[in-house]
Length: 403
Image 1 (spheres, rainbow, N blue to C red):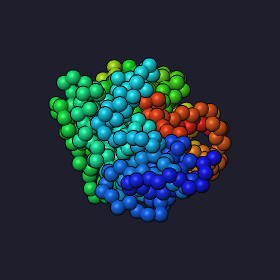
Image 2 (cartoon, rainbow, N blue to C red; image 1 turned 30 degrees about the vertical axis):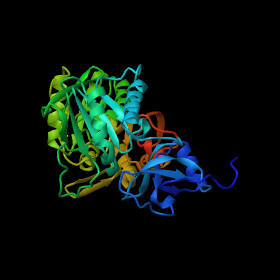
Image 3 (spheres, one colour; image 1 turned 135 degrees about the vertical axis):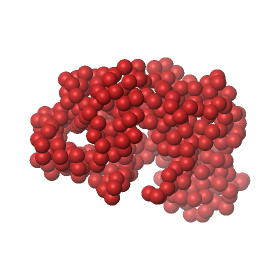
């Protein structure tokens, strides 16, 4: 136990309650604005000391001037310097952390706070690095980090792109393409590999390049349960789950997605991986409407894969995973064969594990079905999460059996 009253601390600082200090020491990387009494009068990205209520140092972090997060933690060490040497050390540590994990050539190299870089992530796609900027505070150190990424991570003859995820966009706006930062320019169509399957990706895309790396374990789970089954792949995007199901031995795969371009990309991915481009049935349009059509026609499936976006608005039909996941399961249940399976994916941070499971069970019950949990998975090993950082465990994948 520390004695009451802490040592004098020079320089800018903020104080947090001891309960918050314990979370930070346990690995939570954010100090929420609601947890501090006095706003730091410092520019964005300034290094600041975080103290507990007794005045003892909890660690150092970067000041964020807008939004719910006031400080993004850098370290819980008392003596710490945020400079190029420290960034280099952390990049090397991130590489070592992934050694021996048997990761595919396309993978995450730096996963934000868990690898010591607040507000950014870095993916490897072929010869290219794609940086995701999730917080404006990252701008304070990106210029210093970029040459280190070029030296230690960028493949020879490759390039680096930056995708800005900070600024929210309205329904009438489009995100700008990823910005070319260094090295050679990327082609709009690049092939990458995952577990022996090949996918076309676009490093310059404004949102997703076309393959969600964090869902790798979910795809593997789907493949392992697909043999001999008819598979319905909802919100199919570019067909990564569909390819896994086919390789797992599915007797048929039906993709449903609102975007025709997603089906076109799926056909490209099928061909690149050695399958017939038309190996999957492709249905374009609103998922709920097609589920109702399947129900009316008594069409059922042995395995339904459902990976909705956290929020979508398709021709006035609004879906929010936080609010509507139970309704989605209720709509799916009638098209699941007796004893059939549902692989349900949720990446909505604000929908907790408990609430997600409750939505799954209630949705099944509302349709007169009973759901039992057979398996589950989360983020792959190249997406490490700090202890106590509940928000970092955003991905939830549940395999259910419907009776």
